Length: 365
Image 1 (spheres, rainbow, N blue to C red):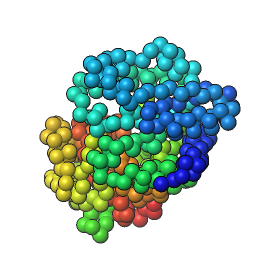
Image 2: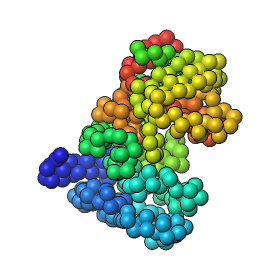
Image 3: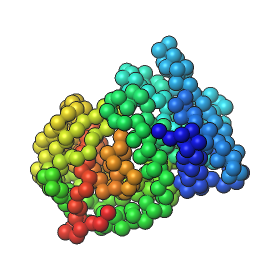
């Protein structure tokens, strides 16, 4: 474990990197920093660095215990309603730093859907206001590790956090250079073949739809969706929606599927004539099978294709497809990525270290 001074230096380095490289904070800009009980030390580092850059920062704090006390007291509607002062602060902000909260995502995921909806009733309006204000923001995965998730995933917390810190420090310019040739190849291709010695041999189709690059920098206005006001840190992905009618072969996962409250491992997806014909898992298959049963029309169609770019990740929770060389293929809905399938189902598998060919040409990642 890092000594206090080393940990402080790490937090300082990360804060400065995100503020200068990902968000490009300028002197005089107004910066809002979210803080929860488990992320307060990180938020303090961002506060200090924002001031050193000549910006005007403000920390908005919420306490984990107080939050859950309100939830258990039936005050979800109150938590889902932001005060006028918060809306006004957002309207006048230039930069927003988000760290995941509340920390106990397992407990949050176990709440009834109606309660969850009430807790986040502010979400759509938040993005509307942020877009009008042209806020530049970041979602920081360093806020994700929490004891309940560590237990649910069966991972080592120190390893998880160390990976997140190193991956968050990867320069977005470096990721952009890696992404460009991959995005170009995907935008021009028709067929992608993925092969690996573990038995993976899958061919999927491209429909020459927009290819999205996630490199930790805010995309040009013409390429943004309403929810792209915040970039993910760490980042490093290239992805596109697939031709919903083309998929033949098998994808054998060698990375874990991380869900909000648990995992699935050993996934194998079989496709034939553009349809998923079988999906099996060594463990946690119910997390795929349950939603699939309710997925309706289109649940068995190929959805999207992604390639990871970040060299500091390895089977990292919630970032399994962002690891360098990881290939993710999904089934189900892809309309959010420019596809034609509106199914609410989203299932996937990730194979890292695979050979990828586009129209017969080897893709270098």
